[in-house]
Image (tube, rainbow, N blue to C red; front, side, top):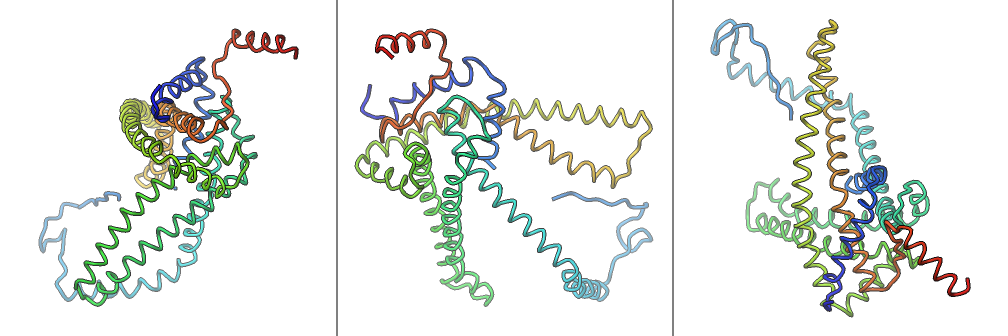
Length: 360
């Protein structure tokens, strides 16, 4: 064994992943884990026209505007925009509100699924409903923290861009404009680094919240305090996590490409078969109807494709989660109550024998 906890637990993480997902293989568990991961991960068209045989130029089929006619047409169109916007402003506001509510809802569900994922791999059983009910408060704390961080980052971006926007409206491309752009890119880079570091600590703080029954701020304080006392361990952990993420990402990408190609091929064959069957039955669709049916069909197909890829790559995030939990157990405290996956009769016999020996 080496002195680096993050390195030592790699083999154990692989073993636990294998036992959970393959010993035995349980498709139902894979599907439930894929649903969890799906929510954790979850928040132009080309148009043409038919010409009746016209040619370019001043012919009967295509007639060009002169400059005055074009200017008048543009002015008329622009003048009608405010009235049109006033007519649909309530629809725009309602659509924006619904989109915002959907984002907030899925963000909260994603936070809840973070805790569900931890409990699932620790207990080796996936009961999504029960785990969500047990972690509604924890999910709310994580949700609030993430939104505070996100809004703070957004405010920093807006403030860095204000001088550039002011110069742009004044058409003054001075050093202030370029300085503001430089500040904008600096804020983006620093924000990404800070988010990565904070996200790493939050990832470790979630199990502390669960198994030490503390708030998100209390869990973060404990994890950061331990990190301050063992900086080399944390640095090695971060380096290894980056390397493991690259390797796991390559494996997941290969699996995703294979599954994606197969899924697209199957769905294309099904779509063509359905179209041919309907055509043989004499059911015809107009161009508008095809578009109306095609758009939701594409959306559903994309969601199915994403879910299938998530299902096929379940072992990748499971391994990464086990690695983080095992690191936390060896580095911070032995607080994670792992249940042995794939424990057979021999293990049960050993447990009973130990109880008899101790007189229980």
